[in-house]
Image (cartoon, rainbow, N blue to C red; front, top):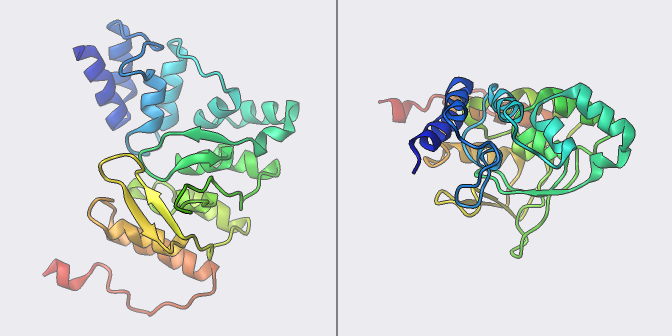
Length: 248
């Protein structure tokens, strides 16, 4: 592999705008295809979630990368003004559905609000909700009857609990915390693919305790407490967090 492309992927992996800029300055084509994917597609599909995600998207766009779906781009940039202008011109865009390959919670047959929630984009999520986006919109269901999840599922089991602000936003606007699915498949098509059966937002949050999710125990139970309170489900006073047995 071109060493500059390796640098670009490393920049994506750690959400380093500096490394991405170095790779692009070294001659990486912002619209060039590697294994059939553009750099922007690679960034969107893979890697962890962080506050620097939109800066990485912006870096690619400023370097000439193209995105044909301007509403999606506005969300990924977390650019509320751009998104609001698009919604004024085409109000129905908040109900459009998209298919995006995603290394974590599925983004197949989802709305822009699902996308904003997956990447923890508070400004975009707020703009969409204020414009009337359906906070209970359902993603596509697969051939096994799995998924069909609402946006809240994208917020409850994020790396370093990056989705917490959007989770709080959804709950403040009345999002249901007691939705139940036949199952939801995390990491569909990747080597860490995991199906959580009979999934609710609480059980999906708790799936973060599985080793492949690599989530922090305290973050998992922070979200479980929030979701339990939102659905009027009492919890024991002592949840044993962090787990004393595992600490010994």
